[in-house]
Amino acid sequence: MNSILKIVVILSMIVLVIGCAVTYHPSNGSGGFSEKRLNENTFEVTFEGNQHNSLDEVRTYLTFRCAELTLEQGLTHFLIVEDASYEAIGDKEFADGDLTIETRTSMSGGVNTTVKSNFGAEAMAGEPIGKFIIMMRVGPDPVHTTASMDAKHFIEANSHLIKR
Image 1 (cartoon, one colour):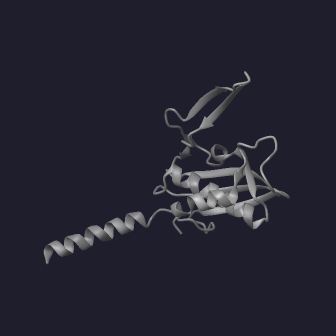
Image 2 (cartoon, helix red, strand yellow):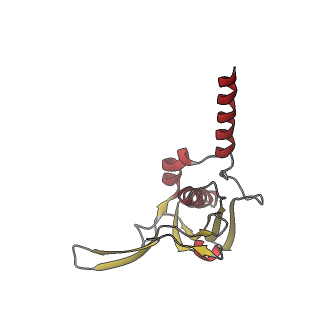
Image 3 (cartoon, rainbow, N blue to C red):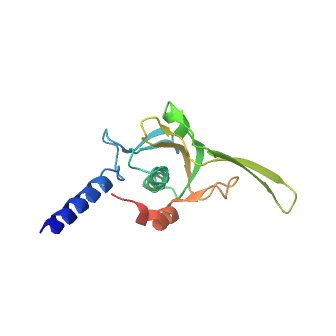
């Protein structure tokens, strides 16, 4: 009987810890996603997690919301034109290796240097917040075809990661 009680207590604690992370839902004052229209096809999309959400989880939820919003607006593709996550959180702590620089040379001799973020900034209280400015379109962006995301494809490929 005593071992059954221990198992129940341990399982209850696990469920409690797992259940504390912010799930995928509209913002309700304790985390979630929100968006603000900046112009006809440009939105600022935010996802606020808590100390139980990983940075990867927040970024996945944020991108998933961008894809959903794109389809809701009757469009098919979106382009992240600005990652404003660092601006959104005020005081920040940065992990080592937070920014990487990548240089690629194409077969035609062109050079493309990009700066990537590992999304390592988080609020001092340990609550990760992601914020993207996205531009939505019908079809991929003709100038930035590789950076355009197919909203339907992203949702299909990542829906198993979304905890509601």
